[in-house]
Length: 306
Image (cartoon, rainbow, N blue to C red; front, side, top):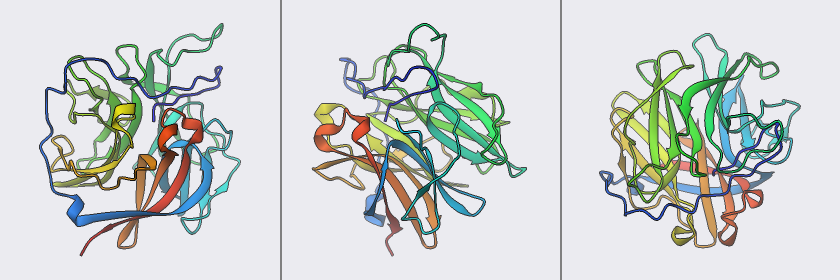
């Protein structure tokens, strides 16, 4: 979900009312994935927020959320019950982390760019992805821009996901809008050092898929979770799967992995859990899609059939 805040006066970025442009001119190649996977959400966490990032840190299942509440860092020993901690996250939104070769962590997040000392940012102001490093999630290096930034004013931007590719490079995927496309697109940037990224010229996924999360990144075998646009005409937001041989050329299964007429599901994230995956997502009532404050984090299981 497009939602940002910082130590500056708070600004909530509501979903974009998409541009009234021509319909999507580029179609994604299609894959049949849903027949091999199933997902169920069994547990409500009681945690309000969006863009959950679930990751194992020092052996502990950790959940980092974007929220208006001060509590953004939660831990769990069973993947069901999460407890808040005293960790103070750097100001920003849409957190995503990767473990670095030396065992430290690199944290990425979206935030507004510019000087807002005299007035808070508008939801349409330009945003960028920043990066900081930490070894203990108690102290963080100064945040720096990664080179991934919004080029034109608008709300449909952000929700980055980062992954270390099999070749050791760091890939970043995020939501953007581009001229000539009616719906949101997914874009890609690559980094050799995890700090400075080179943005690919063209989007890699079209047609209003949002909230990318790379579930698996193996040589010749990549898998991505996606949600769908929060535009009112396209609700409810659904979860989808996409596959790729290299993390660049993606095939999307147009059949939803999950669709519920009463709920919007968005911002999926997951970690391996034995033979299945522990999956989290934000869930918000159908008529509350434009209200991120109404979103709650839910936990479930993603399983490969057979």
